[in-house]
Image (cartoon, rainbow, N blue to C red):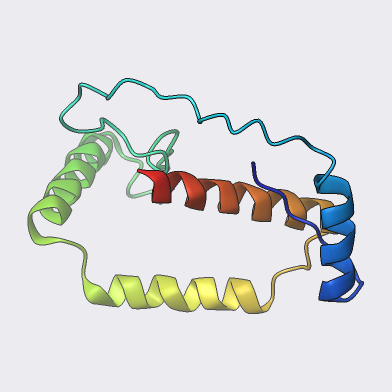
Length: 131
């Protein structure tokens, strides 16, 4: 089980609150369910690859009939190049800079969302450690 508590109190007070409520839950020492091993040698899609939508916005010149057929070909050619050669380092640096800016100027999460995301992250971490 994973539990997360968020509040404006001191860490000691939050711990006291958590212990007082969570200690009422009986520990049944049950093992997490075991699932049989996946028989695929390779996962078809990673979770972050699913439901990916790629859109192209065309200029007037690009919207001509002869260009439209070429766009899909070039897109898949580029994907093959990435598989063979990898992604250029500057793209990682640019993405890191964008993410840094998003983090610095992000809105503060409300306590409920913060708690929920922290609990989910902690649970995923525990599951990975058990594997």
